[in-house]
Image (cartoon, rainbow, N blue to C red):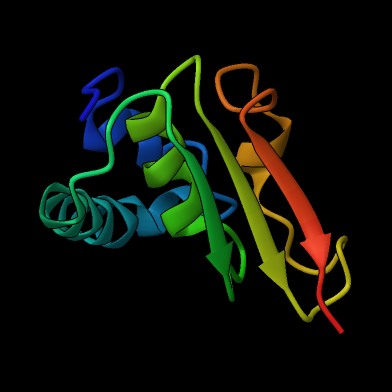
Length: 101
């Protein structure tokens, strides 16, 4: 698994208000710990179903690295709560959002 970004860097791309950073940061640390058990190698292509606002998507994108990709699917409209991460330079080319039916 790639360690390109640390938990704080990943948590900062969230849409959450800065006053809630500590909550987002601790949740990101938890997601990174889960990711270690999933053994996703750098360069992987990952399909994430039920991605919500993309909080876990950003963690997965950090794991797959520059050569990998994440396709994130959620039934909500694409602009509803879309993760700020999708607009950041470090993840934009790695994450594709799709609206499920």
